[in-house]
Structure formats: C-alpha cells, structure tokens
Length: 307
Image (tube, rainbow, N blue to C red; front, side, top):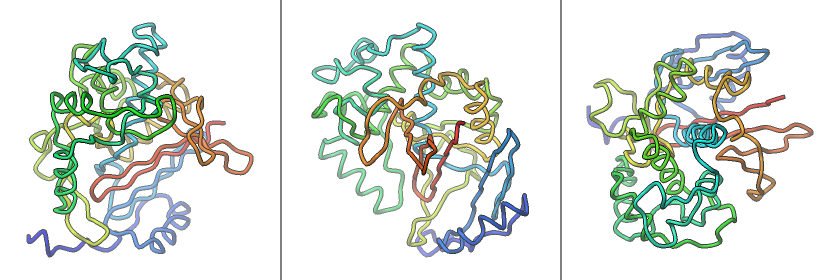
C-alpha cells in the first residue's frame, strides 16, 4: 500500500444497541468521522455500545486519557502511605536544578511550571518533523526525558499549565519508586485489578502486533502508530471499548484505586477545575468529570456524571 496516497474508508457499518446507534450516527456523519468509531454509554451500571466499523475488542490509542490512569496510580500511592503528595521529584529520579524540587502533586495537577513539551530546540525540530511526516513524534527514552527535564524552564509554579512532560515525569517517578517499568506498574495496579486484559502501554513499535490498528490524519494521510516510550504515562495506552467500559465502571462503583484523583481541587481556567489530571466542569446544574485524548489519527474522551 502507498501510505502517502491512501485514504481512510468511510464510516463502517454499525452494530450494537439500536437506540444508541440512532442517537450517535447522525452526530458522527455530521462531523465527517471516518473508519472506526466506538461509543459506550453506561447507566445504572449497564453498558450500551455502538460500534461503527469496529467491535467491542477493537484496539484504539486513547492518548491523554492515559493521564487519568497515571493519576490514579499516584493517588493510590498517597492514600496507602507509600508516598507523600509533596514528595520531591528529585528524590525519585536523577534530575537536577529547579525541576528536582517540583512535587509529585504539582506534576499530577499540571501546576509544576513545566512546559507542555521539551523546550530544547533539537527536540522541537524532531517533533515537528515527525508530525509533518505523519510519524510518531514521541521517541524519547527515559534518559532523554530526564535531560529534557533538567533543561526545562520552570515558570509560574503552582498555576495551572497543561504539561505532557510533567505527567511523563510523574509516571516514571512512580515506576522508579516501585522498581518496575511504567507498563508493568500500570498492569499490576490498575489493569489486573479491573480485568482490563486487552489494555497495554507499548513503548516502541516492537511491542505491537503486526496488525496493530493505526489511524488517519484529518487530511486523510495514514499515520504511524504512536508508541511513545518514556512519555507513555502521558498518553501511551492502547485499549478497547470493553476495557474502557470496565475502567469507567471501576471509577463509578469505587473498585478502581486512587479515586481521590477525581476530586476537583484547583482552578484550571475557563471554568474548569482540576484534580490529579481529571477535569471537572459545570454542565447546567451538574458536575461532569472528564479527560480527552488525541494521538496521530485517534481521538478519545471519557466523561463521568458521578452522581
């Protein structure tokens, strides 16, 4: 296949709950979405599914929804007394200068003062080049991530500023404290606990099966899989609709670890409140707790009406 000339197929055939399909399909077509889409709606602990060109076991990149999982690991470690919220990053990772004094809680809540991504010019050029070529822009290993952290300029600490770099450092710090890699930590403490057997955090293309699904750009260009190495805690999980339904149910019924992460604690601007990664918004008189995500060719969102 000539990837540069390829185009995404149209929106696939629908299977699942007829009422949910009828609600969702016009919205998808109005938005011009193509290829595969899955929607799961849970009410009274009962899931209804609508799949278009997909099934309950179709694998998707969930992008920054991964941050919510990393935040649960952090909150769980704090709740159990394993770590303190004000633990300094430099006590867990080999970083130096101002970043060493940033706390894990500041990383988890995007109040660390760190930039969204590395400010080093060579890193910026590499990311831009990859995006323009529809390639994976996140290939930094942990050693490179730590060098990026050392070089980062910290500004307006304690004020909200969304940072992939910060969440990546948080996840790697938690993994270092546990003495395992981030994928293993996530598997042990979240996926295994909730029965999310089809979810993973591949670090490189070598960790993917040959038929791993990939996505399409808005212009219809074939995208490379995003296996984002040291940045996995910020957006590296691949999961299925079934597993994400298990995740949502665990958050709603209390069986997931680290649920204090969902509590809104700080102002995040534009009417948002933020806890550990999770955002909370007012929608009318209701509170909605949510996070979204995007990688090359994939978009995701998880929204909870907790009451």
